[in-house]
Image (cartoon, rainbow, N blue to C red):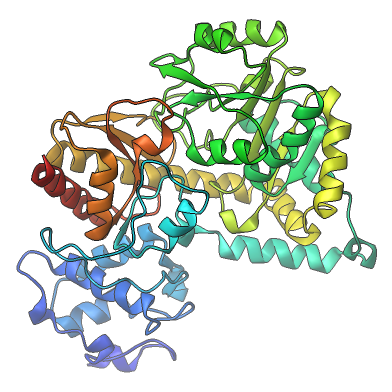
Length: 492
């Protein structure tokens, strides 16, 4: 066809493109079928990062379909983060997903694998779950890694390396690169109403390291227990216990942590997720915040994990507790949910009494984070690229959250959905007398990966699942939730 011969070099041409046979598409599902074929080609490398897709009019003519079918398929790929439209440059593959696993067996034909979901998960349980294959990955807290702003990050790295003096290639300040500490202080002032000086910021390798650094510092201050929200993060509980700290459980209700129960626990410190409680999604109410601040002024210490507060959709932001009380709050955050966990960059802002001791622990742990990634992140923050990326993510996450809520309403009609206004996950509780570890085990055997809510409880409670939606396209969310609904009915 004439349009094919006019295509630019490097553009796949002709009706042989990926050996697409539109006759294999189901009636009324041509766009979905084409999207799936293109996704598979990106995943297995037939379409590599940097390749251009054929113009929509050319591919539509070759397949003898309306141009709208191809335009819709390209739109879905762009929403997934796989391609990007560049006007005269065409539609370019910008991110490759890992190869898709084999299709999950239909319910009733589970695969056999070693148990992951036990009532007493061990320290390697998250490693085992990450390694387990699944077609639908609803792991909570997992960001959409295909959305990582590669072009902006490369620009930032180039700018840093271009202007970098040789002196910056030596060992850095164990507290973190001054440029990043300034950038973090600005980011927190703009986005979390936390106003700190750059010298107040300690750069760490994520919240996990922040908790590890706090172990010895808290024990030196006579603190041997850190109370935890119940339900609350299994990972945080494991990190604290690994440091020899007890973790008394304090119940959470619709207003947040029960401060009366916190006082009764006798713990001098508490780990909180007040902006979007993990895993319930509760936002700590104004009255509870006032109670917490009174508890802290009476000698309590708050460890505030602000893990995903920037991701909000249906409500205005709530200020961090650190914005209200400076000398009794250790504030922790990271870019793991904003960009990627692989960067291993976060921050810890401690009360003045703890700063010198924490700097010493950081120094003797690793001499400080790698400097070059810190400088690249500082550039992203200062340039506005990180804020632009966050705006893009909010729109994408809202659509995926809505798809999950719609799917849950259809396929688990008796379930209750918690924490929908913000974050990267939903928590679902259900009335059926089915242990959530049994449901999660069956789900994994049928290609769906998620967390049982009981993992994150210290005391018994209603069964449920914690379902991340940020990393999964809407169509796949619907398919995965349908499997969960089928399994729950079968197990009931």
